[in-house]
Image 1 (tube, rainbow over the protein chains, first blue to last red):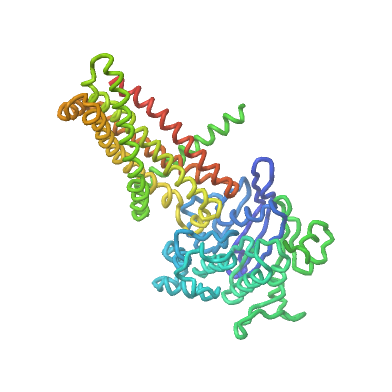
Image 2: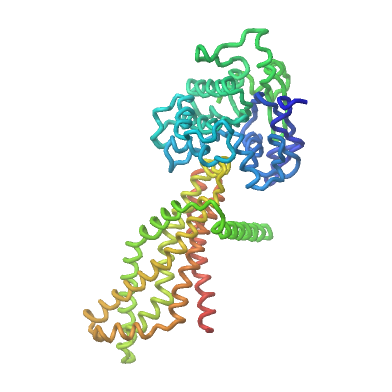
Length: 279
Length: 252
């Protein structure tokens, strides 16, 4: 098997219980380079916990998690730092540091993960890289502002800039559109699709909105037109194949498949996330 | 009941774990000197006005109360001795620590708690920074260094406050007698416990604040709860440890 087909992320039978409730229950999944996985589920279904478990922010009770071929479950915090440097994360609340400016926030991983970042970035001017990342999310002008001065949607976009500034091969998005108006939400999802198509990164997207999945599955970012274009029927099947949906219920994975399979599902719980999954 | 005890012991274990890690981090790299100085400024310089105020008032109050009591035994000339012993041994360290606990244990708990609920702590870990190294250790160092300094200042100001009551106001003794007696009353044992206490209290205040801040759950309400818990437990521990230290030093 060549490296391109080796999974960059693997969950094997992972379980975690908080008191009497299952956060993760025998979860298995694998994600190959360039693949997109959209994770739906009711609140408390374990979606955020799953994302956090990927980079070892929560430790699981049983099972194996491998990130870039390295074991996450038994790694110490120090061992995890180089692995985390290769996975960008957008937290639900943005997770931006209040005490730093937007520019410093985006620069933070570049400075802090110096030894771990992609070789192409070593020696590069971190300030300019941070500006590039902010330009990517169209927020270059906020460089010296503080996160508290930005709107919720802008903070989310800065969060995306910080997650992708090190050009990680895997990006984790925790509810990128939660609590945003539909227009802003679509802007955010367009950025997520742009990141996927420009940099060819793999992504794990937790969401409540069916439209988020639709954008990822039915659109691609056209670099020449600088906007999302719909995939025609029958065309770009490879992209559709690489975009899979996963539905979680009480910690378990109850569905895994493409958009068509999702829409064809007769499961009542799974159907809840189709079309009218808007918050 | 058993569950309650279990949670209590489990949290104490977590606390010791945090304490151990933050102490070990003092020796480990990276060192965040900027954060240490920033915290020293916030905790030390920031607490100075209130510590001066409390010091002056407590000195003056002891002098007033003691003047009446000592008068009954015709021993009002001993006012300097009494004031300096009470201040240096007990009231200086404890009152300063209580003020700093109210001011800074709460500030630390709310700052770290807000960072926890807005996922900034997770973000820090995700971006390759150890939150204990970056947040807890600088606060531990800063509080532990600053509290003894603040206590010494409170002691001195307290003695001045007592002087103002005893000498110019009540005219119990002459200024020379007051300062000589209050200075001569102090022996190494008094200075030892007077400086050891704030050092220990500094550790308690910073670690308790950080501990409750870092384990905050449940959004903004949780932050409020964390602040209350931090201040209450820091104060309880201040009084418990002062008793323990007194017990040791009385026997010396």
